[in-house]
Length: 471
Image 1 (tube, rainbow, N blue to C red):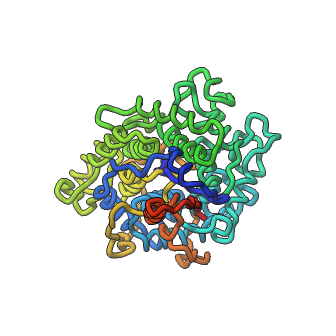
Image 2 (cartoon, rainbow, N blue to C red):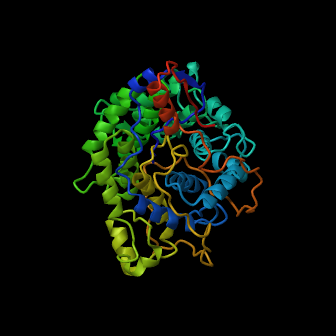
Image 3 (cartoon, rainbow, N blue to C red):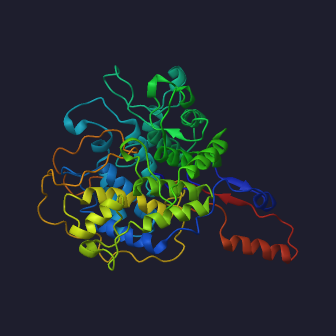
């Protein structure tokens, strides 16, 4: 999914730079894209926020879906709206860390999902929480402990899962590796090994494969016929842009080649498709690709992707039978047509939530590396209420339900929560406002004005600028 994170995320040692050097240095990330669609993003965010109940989104078979909740939290943060919902979601995710990254709720001890842990680390930093004490867990330390070390051979730098059964291949994929790079960069020093492993998943054509273990080949080019994936490439490009800002070797060039490849995959209408079961054009792939292209400064292509997403959005005037769900974004054109004819049934909503969450990234166009850091370009009204009541009753999935395509960017399999968890968070809420109050990158406009005045007035001292990174 990736996000829009042209950023300057991450915790690290602050760097003091002379004004002349600062002006002469070109940024690795593009500025927040001017091709975003704030109105469409606001409408999508408002609809998505109303789908939350007690700080979480439900899964297709009941219980809370923490992966989807995190995806939606990131999307709402990118859109700079629905702060009460974002705060509640952050508290609930923090209270259910082990429900998401382990099998503890099923009584199976000794398993920790590496990809889920890395995604939690990134989400905590994007939400403005302390990643070293998120729900009582040090997610940075846990993520680092799951990264394969020097004795891992060609797996060195890979995020792995800890399990009592090491007989099978690791389930972590390129999405997981991208979250690892993003989370570690935003929370402290970024190990070069993690970047190197991600780069090895890139083929000569520029695209990235989803599965590092495909055909038991340690690099993409070693495969006879690798399947390059738009979604994974979009995530990798954003992670590598973030790594490049941290000075990682080889990251900038790999990100550039990845963005080049993404542009070759864009359809005439601006949309993108994934791979395998999601190879047809769809909102999820288009949202992630559009966000990545904006992050890489490919504004024209990013604007075309945003336009393709707007074409899939329900409105009060064009929604017909689904007008009450204005703002929601369909997975594809067929889904949109069906909704206009029959409305959104309860069995359809899971697919719409997933599509809207990642499409929102392509509309807001805040890079994954910047989510939670950049202030909104203009005030965006928040929904008048945190959530709207969930319709009573949760029909069991039936054959008539619209199938939810399995996105190529799915998290590593995580069991659904066996029974609904109490809605009172056990975690102590972060004192940092969710999505707000985070230090931004670079000097403020006021600082530049002061420097200019000093120079005009004959001042000779250079002003030291300190770049603070998100904590």
